[in-house]
Amino acid sequence: MVKHTPTSVVTIERFIIEQERQFPEATGQLSGILYDIALAAKIIASKVRRAGLVDILGAAGAENVQGEMQQKLDVFANETIVKAMDHGGRLCVMASEEEPGLIHIPDGFKCGKYVLLFDPLDGSSNIDVNVPVGTIFSVLQKITRGTRGEMEDVLQPGRRQVAAGYVIYGSSTMLVYTTGQGAHGFTLDPSIGEFLLSHPNIRTPSTGRYLSVNDSYEQYWDEPTKALMRRYRGLDNEHKPLNVRYVGSLVADFHRNLLGGGVFAYPASSTAPKGKLRLLYEANPLAFIEKEAGGAASDGTRDILDIDPTELHQRTPLFIGSKGEVDQASAMLGGALSSVGA
Ligand code: AFP
Image 1: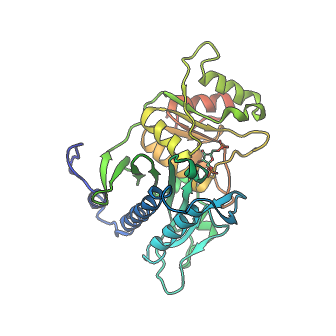
Image 2: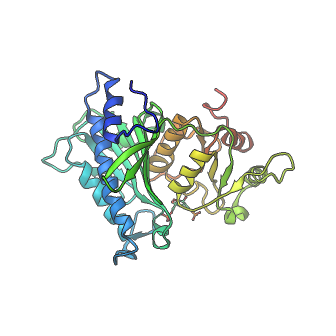
Image 3: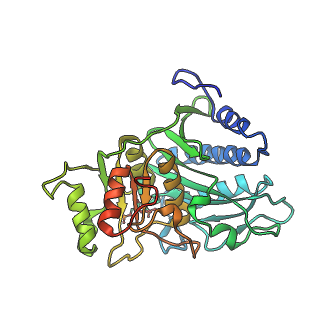
């Protein structure tokens, strides 16, 4: 395999092809999905960049399945991804945060052997204040026998993901993905319209620097969760405090902590007993990336990747980041992570 250094210019396309070549039996379908996602990300990035310039902000008038107001860019991002992906003959079904049910491949297009789950524009309430937003995606293999994908194909544990990634639309646009051979980051060069390899083989520090949590919910947390947060903050007088950083845009908080080390926490509370974040297209893909970077993810009792989903829009508490901090969460909240200490 070619050794990529920070000085060699490697496009995402070249990188995907080189990774695919390591698997002579590969059909190229997964690579095709990743190219199409990169294309959709470029289209969304160009729209997000212009959001402050054009009259596109504001609610679209519809409420999405989670009961949150959809912004126009959510709708645009959702449609962009669906249209970029539905005709390639690689997918058998899709599901999006923005749509209540499965998104089937239209009649007339071929169905393939993969399933795509995505959150088209996470953190969209941040758009009108110029805070980074993101796209998150997860790819699974079809397990049912028919041609079209079914709910059973979608409701698979995260451990079965064959690819996952996210795009952050920030000061630059970055795409980070994994196919289980490390987590790799690409930065969009807008002058040539290409994602270039900028962060090969990302490794997250084993102990953290940052704590990202919305502690306005503290009054709704149970005692073990409050104790965990005190520990993260060094208020137990035994540990060094983590630095608190919370954007409120999952991809932005996750990305910073992945590179700098730390933990993102969205615990269960009395007002949100299952937390807020969605298992299939938020927690699972980020957990796969985190694992590939040497970190971990837990709901407090189980490794996120081991959870058997029962619903498309299922929520989960989430503790994700450096192993040391996630391990602390499992120890104090009652779970033992299969991947931690293994
Ligand atoms: P929005 O899409 O409504 O902005 O929600 C963003 C989000 O799903 C995720 O990106 C954040 O980490 C989380 O919610 C923030 O939630 P709180 O506002 O409850 O802290």
